[in-house]
Image (cartoon, rainbow, N blue to C red; front, side):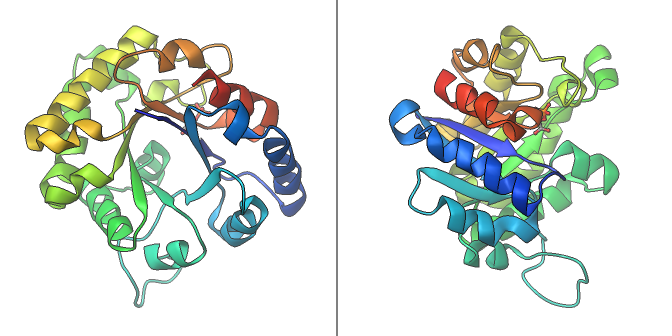
Length: 248
Ligand code: PGA
């Protein structure tokens, strides 16, 4: 399976910052120098159109960091999946742990968002992951299994069209990466859940996220069930993000 490397810019950027970062990414000619990876970046909503334009004609795709579960209506402040699609994005991250913890998004809301993204022609990147307390109490599989089940139950046959990102909350932005073996164990569990729901979901890309850096990416990507990465901090530095894409 081709690897997928996605940059999540989070709440970072400005027109000047984005232009410089994109210039660095384009200069790296990833189509030629990272041929085994599909690459995408997810800027804040307000920059989506500009980033799509700046990357047009390149091999780098664009995604949003969230979408509304609603397609339209009286939902002040929300951004709908069809709007994101219309601007030329291909992906939408849903259920990032920062959305779950700071914005109270439940498993059901995340599943609804994945469905809304699919309905608009976007590929949802569904994030799951356990906290440190959950890992230490031995409930990692119960937590990520529950998070994924909400999506499995809602999507039915469309399950084959999603991407799943395993992001242990304790590894996000902390500099603590799951070891390749720890990540692989959870990925194998997630793959088994997907396949038992639907045989064709064996092909769903499973990304790892949480302090992926140029010096640990290759080992993570070498694991059997790790099909790429969701990159936060290191996606803000062109040289680091390029090195991670090339590690694929
Ligand atoms: P990080 O973030 O790479 O900065 O740990 C990953 C993410 O939250 O997607």
